[in-house]
Image 1 (tube, rainbow, N blue to C red):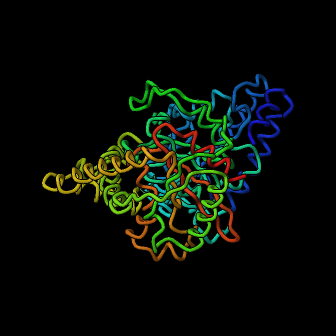
Image 2 (cartoon, helix red, strand yellow):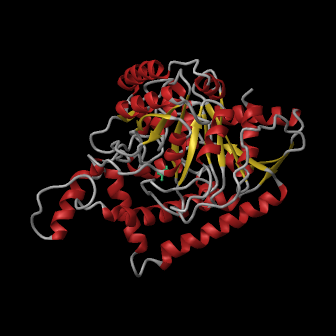
Image 3 (spheres, rainbow, N blue to C red):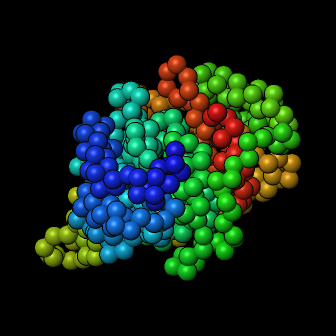
Length: 466
Ligand code: GLN
């Protein structure tokens, strides 16, 4: 628990510099074994620790933080795990990171991810990056795309939280595969300033933590309006860490279509047990149909996300950021050469798909239609939230697969792993992964709540993980 640790640091009962050196030694060792970091920020961590030792302050005093590679940290190489951003050291930190630093956090590194967020298994890391290994079984995936953040959270034996980012499920998915809490907040709850964009209308930054209380404390610090991000919300930030430990009367809707044949037995059984628990604790549980969501979520999401991604990636042309070469030939030849050499296969696939969907002549058939479907999905949720406080489904249809299984999957099978998570992302709704221990790999239960109702999810997590 980070709360007790912060108290000790503020009372100067912890030698922060010594502890930071120990933690850095631990994470270096863990990184060798599990390949979770894209970069360890040793110098930054030590300078933050020294400053803190002199003047202990803040709600996150002495808490160690790992940041997804796609979230900028000033002067620390931030590449979104892509070779095309090789050598890019941002001149500023993302607002979420800056808020944590101002509250006394110590930034220990950038965690590896699917390149720009393009994946659900962290196997689509950029060229030259290592694929991270699951802390519970090294032959299995950590989940993606915020895979490194979830894995180090599971591994950390010290006071720690990680920042992840979700476009279509990238916070809850790896949290589910690694057995930790991952909270994706309402769109606009946390500033996106300093986030390397995947798809602007979908991206959210959120915390990954070992328990609900730590996630709540982190959310309190990173949330809030930011004039540098016009899509950030002015909605007041509640005290998320005042967790309600009572679910009596909580109106729970179990998503009917989320328990189909493609969902594994261990996942269904584990979730059903938790649902029984909720009923015993006094929650009012019913089944609700979200058919359009489950049926049309994936096609709509992959059209919209790749469309936005393809424009966002246009700026990586070897001129302004990262990878560069001697200027030769025409501009078209120059940038095609840089992009061919430095983008991974999945990034190229998405650029082509997204560009196609936006091309005049196809725009109405794909992009505009997907936007309309997005509205239908939002309406379906709106209706559901008239009756329920929280909707429940598995986070992923399966527990973490083996790398040998993933390598046999087609791109479409990869995309289908997100079938349960794209819905809340399209609707900008907060959602949480609540880990369930099994005798094998952990199962993830996903709770979805209405906009700005993150507190309900954190309380549910607190109750179900005790
Ligand atoms: N797996 C999804 C995708 O590949 C979601 C990724 C994300 O949320 N960044 O787009």
